[in-house]
Amino acid sequence: MLAGIENRITYALITLGTLVAAFYFSSLIGQARIKLVFTKEALLHVWESHFWFSWEKDISIPWEIIDTYVFEEDRTWDSFIINLTTKLRYKIDRLNIIPVNDDFDKLVKDFPNLSNHFKEGVELSHDTAFNSIKEGVSKYQSKSYKQGIYILTIAFIILFIFKITNSGKLAGILSLGVIGSAIAYYWSMINAKK
Image 1: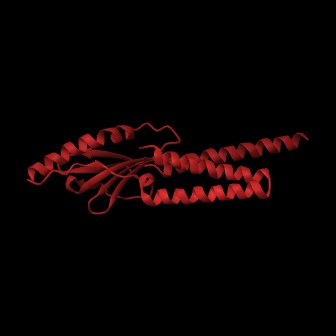
Image 2 (image 1 turned 120 degrees about the horizontal axis):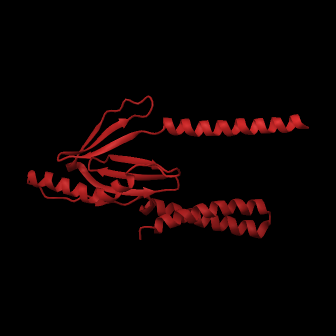
Image 3 (image 1 turned 90 degrees about the vertical axis):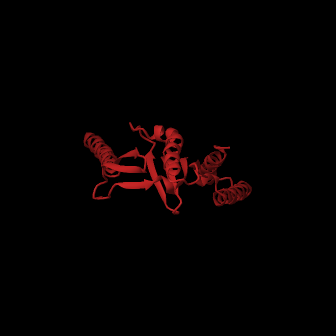
């Protein structure tokens, strides 16, 4: 009997150690550090530490091609997206389920004023009309996203009514509850910026 308890404790410790090691190494491999530098000519993305097996070069984004910016928060990621007039995007993601000591929130807060200050200086020196960098539309505000949520909500209601009227099994209702809570979360994301 004692050997069985020792084996369970050993298995539990091995499992716990494996999970901790997997989380630590995956976060170590999947993180990089960058510094954004605002200059008169461009927004510079400077690598302070790269992802493993990555040899990306530093990025320079001229102020003339920066169009809009968007901040999107999700359950596990915060994203700051800069849309360019060339139809490309520059995106910074931050994992928000663990505390990270960085200045991502300061970037989100200060970007509109700083970027427009630098862009205005560049465009005035080129004698072109000043087009300010404005906040864009997030994916949660897009028409296709809203249509998808409408369709999922209608499908959920139909499945819920079908489940209630045909069988009262608790397992099916609980799984519908999980789906319903996910739909409710994304409805809250749609209504968050209104």
